[in-house]
View 1 (spheres, rainbow, N blue to C red):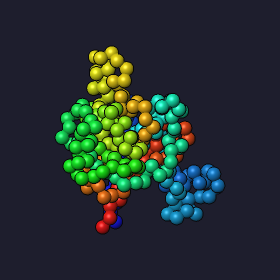
View 2: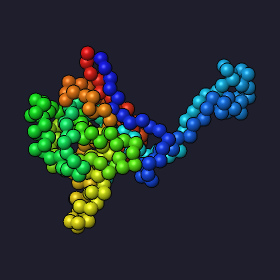
View 3: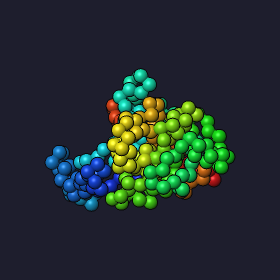
View 4: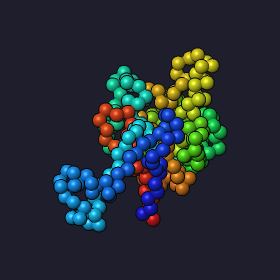
Length: 251
């Protein structure tokens, strides 16, 4: 069995106001001082004079790293019912067979349509079944960590999102900053048309699905024949949960 990590590293960084993570690190010396203060146990009674090392998030969004979006992220209600938060979703959704749809030929802002999905499935000879986890490979993980990361990527259309949902897919993922095309392109299109439903169209497709964003290493996977584990953190009432997403391949 081989396990391939599809998750980004969580690190103390500030890429932009909307994409930053703060982590305070307390080393073993600080831990020894804490133990002395709490329990009056001096460092001389600790192995090598060291206490516990502890980290604390000082700024961390549920969307700051590789994460799973819950339906509640998109709208408060979906199909006329209250949208589910991340802690309310069935665990069965997050461990299943995976399939990679190669869209690396798409340029930034290009649409990934139903026809594109069907053509790629035909090319790799795969028939979707309910609860498969569909991963869209764009190649944009090469930009991860760069200031322009969020400005790259094609966009899965609302129609393609609904089509995948109709095939029984409940978890979809992408190796880009977002599932839709880059936000600045969506904004330009929305303002140019003056119509609702252009900005964030696939997110707000009115279907109760989950999407994994900011994946990496999809290029190391075969098109199919592997399992995906993508269990999100169980955060009460949250719109998303950070996840350690991995692909599990047989010998």
